Image (cartoon, rainbow, N blue to C red; front, top):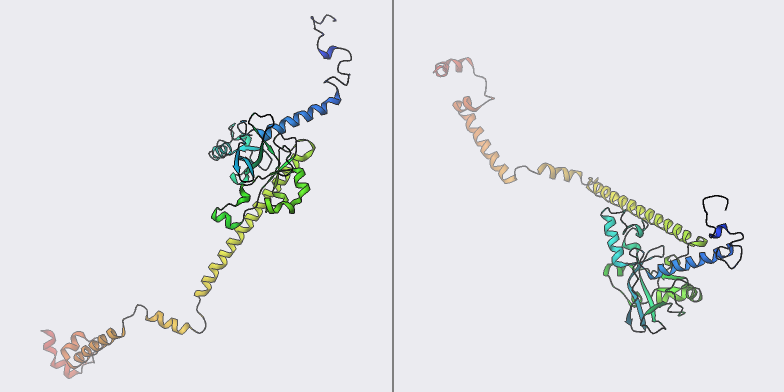
Length: 327
């Protein structure tokens, strides 16, 4: 074909009119179909495999009274991806030790701060219809299958009270399924779901396996970033308030030590008396001192030896004691 070295023209790009028919895979009208198929496959993998290890999630049921609950060891992140609890915990530990670039920690995402950002998942599971002994995740209200990702589903994150956080208690609601389909949420309404799945708010609902197209995933990511920022500001405000309260308490203690107007005299008297000699000892010392002083004053010899402030002698007394002083 033109002396180009033997080009083989079997490739479709060299054929005139190739890909023009609407039934061919190269036609532009089929691009949307391929995108939908790829998105459906991505949603299926998100709902059935661990985002870290890629292993299939175990949704084997734990039989309870009134139904079956499966997926006890599964957790979900705010972006709607599912993880095995053990793999997520291991990835967090590795990341805390500085292995942030590891293949096992990279899928976890930096938006996950810790286990507090991973929420337990409990599916309502029913046996498969093919009789192979498997189970599928279904909505406990509508009964529609939600495990394949084709139907939008939400994880209900229940708000815990402060008393339960301190005591670590759980109730029956904490053991019920907490994944519902979007249709069930719309039909029942948030108020109708509070009794069995609450308390929770709309912002506490996590869309599982959100689609990338249509801006759904981008909206979820932006809302989570805003929520984290608000929590950080609230935490900083709480710290500032606690620091201010502590400073006010110290100032109150200092001010309580300041002398009040009606007590300065008594305080001064106590301070003066602190560390001084008791009254009984002071009396004995004074008596001994007065006895010595009287003896010194009565004896001229003792007065010469111990007395500093002795009386001045006359000329006659000096002449009489002249030889006594020189001895």
